[in-house]
Image (cartoon, rainbow, N blue to C red; front, side):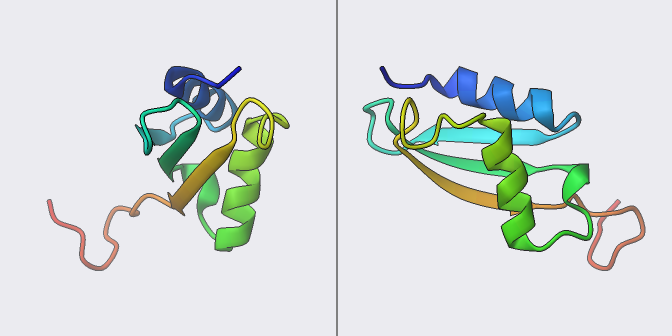
Length: 86
């Protein structure tokens, strides 16, 4: 059975409090998603380690309930960071 977008989002938010999560169903089949995740926990981490945090949040569902997830991660901009607008 496929994993619903709302369930993916809930799992990520539960594991990464304060995260901003956007989920898009790429194929309309409930099986191929893209996720963009911005989380304060990502600050100072490599992209690989950011992705590991998201995959850990999904608790082993990748390859089973969740067939494919295109993942984009980033740490939120810090106040006073270059390029920030107010």
